[in-house]
Length: 605
Image (cartoon, rainbow, N blue to C red):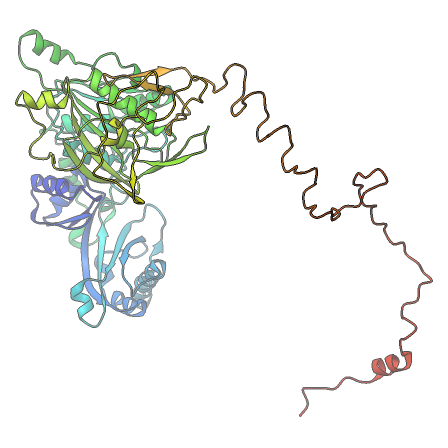
């Protein structure tokens, strides 16, 4: 069997398969292959949290072009897999120079199957777009082994035992914008080590995917328990015929479910999102384990705690640390003021969640932001503005966007003091040798690169002891500090909120102020109009008009007073019935002769 998954989740999927009893497990790219019986095929669809599909390969061969593909597919005995009159559907995964048109490869495969039934005198199968009786998967790749044998491609035909993708769990009745995939959410939770032995908090829950997947893992409930059907339930031929008794026994078995004594908390700034989450949680029957509220993350008072954690602390026992997990907007599919928002996230984490483990999923790609006041565009990476040191980085892909999952171990005080006490971040995963991406955030305001002989002088260091001189009116950057100077326009000025960062690292919202001072507009000094010098108008030099040089006249004529006048509009010519059609010089006899002569026939020899 082959279980397909998302990039970065292959090892997690392999561990799940091993727990279910799979053997000969081999990890590939976005897939894991393994061996097992029919019972394991059913359990894989029911239990695997990080699998997209479970495929059962039936034929392997090599083909060099679509015509050869057609002839080889036609040699397969399709009566073993498809019953007469059933519906079929084919999807594909093609990485081949021999098969540039993936649709054409599907058409040739479909034609070969249908022609096989027609030649046998049987009723040909119908093609279904959705909910087909038998769903096939066509995989074509230019493997090194296949290409060495005459430049042909490796072809694998498989039965899709899942039908609809396994990320469609069946519990979601409402969705918000840009939701995270259920498979990716479960993979992130398993990578983060979530096992249901602590409290969990998602402050930006959206439609509640993290919350529900966390509850399913904590209670050890099968991921596919809410689905209406799977592809293998429609198989009717040979050894693959659906075994109703075996499936019902596996589906009704609740012996592996476990007790969850902690609690899962969810919040979101959007009331619509919280209502959608509540509906989905109710549909999954997990309201007992999940609490929801409408709250802005910036206004978080204190970290939530379950009754069980409070009980442990009251008894003097050590309670496990809270796990915070969040998928904030990246500025890609959902608009957000990236610098302002992520600074706020870092400040709240540092201030309100000391002692917790925070896992943040965000884009690794740079986002283009534009200052609405200056129009300046800047590329930024969201993680750059959190301002905390991660102890773990895991590469992921969310909906085609390259992302990272980062772990932040939140402690009180500064990192140097934390390390001086003998503590350290996760040594197994921390990379202390990597250059910090947050160094530029601590750069003084007036610091500039210094050029020497046309090049940047790297040896010259910034003088930290240099202080502000009130007499010289000179700051660290060497610029004057006049009271009438324009306020600085920051690159990351926000469109939603403006914040100021204090010395202790906290972020405080501030009111938006206009650049207008003393009743003057920007760029208005000494009562002069913009672009005005000595009372002259723009482009007015020596009382000459534009394009008027050396006494030449302008393009437009002048009236008696010397001012330019507009040209008279052109009159429309009236129709004259007496106007002759031809001019007097026209030779009418030659014209009549030319018109009466027969035209030569060029088609004759």
